[in-house]
Image (cartoon, rainbow, N blue to C red):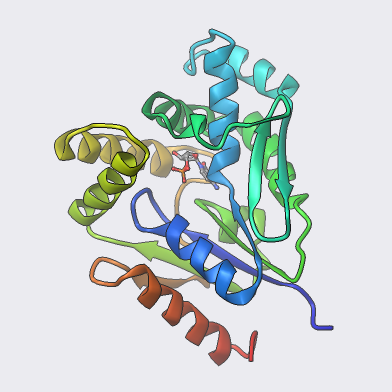
Length: 226
Ligand code: DC
């Protein structure tokens, strides 16, 4: 059997990473892993513990002791906090902002990156995040960096939030995206940058299916899949 294939998908919030990564994994029969969920679970633990996400010492200590796991059924990895599936709770706006803050700390990243690397690969894996192609799996033979115009990203994020039952305005969502972009790009450890060998795709005017198609074509051109 061929070696399992790793596909890394990185990019900022609202570029359609999750939808594309999920659909791509489904299409190829690979496991989909959302690395952001681990930072969100860590942030949820910090908030639940009553600590401020800005209190670095407290965050480091809480995350070091937190019971965070990534479990997979071969298709989808789910994040468990203290043994409970927190997939929904980690989508709340306060967790989103806290995740951006806790993910700046090297001690937190070290622990969660080890967790992300420990997920069984299965037939192959599509992992999405900010630093998958640069830090988590720099040896991935296919790295995608997704971009999209800021207005389109805010619109998509808002649609996603509404589906999750949260009511916010486009202006609020755009402001939060801008703030997170700044936090994610300016942090010292693993900032959001494209790997030098990443294929960049601008998804502004593409549907998720069209992006998936482009990635499949790239994988074929590289002779990674038939
Ligand atoms: O992709 P997301 O919105 O679920 O990510 C939540 C936060 O986690 C994001 O603000 C930055 C951080 N993150 C990270 O630092 N590295 C990753 N590989 C994934 C997410």
